[in-house]
Length: 71
Image 1 (cartoon, rainbow, N blue to C red):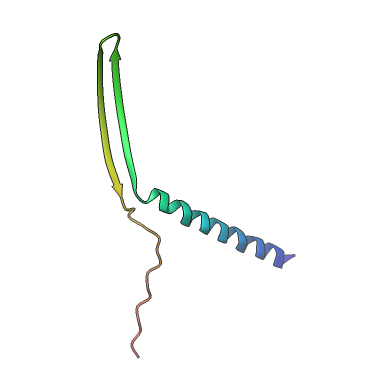
Image 2: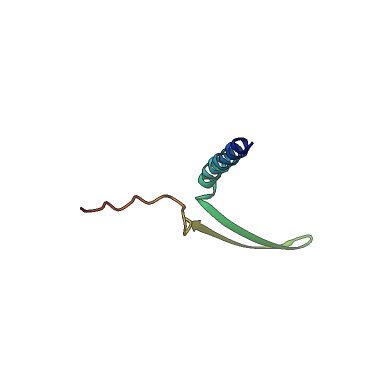
């Protein structure tokens, strides 16, 4: 019974890690856009927009190489 539970927890971790890897690539190059439109019918319309690039995340969760040890 414990081996089944252990196998299920390992499987769920692997599945979650794969989903994170897939969706992390989609959100890595993200942009934020905000637009406010004010319209007074029939002829006056004003639109204000703001767009920014979020860039790379501060913590990209990549494993760093271990430093080599000198003897």
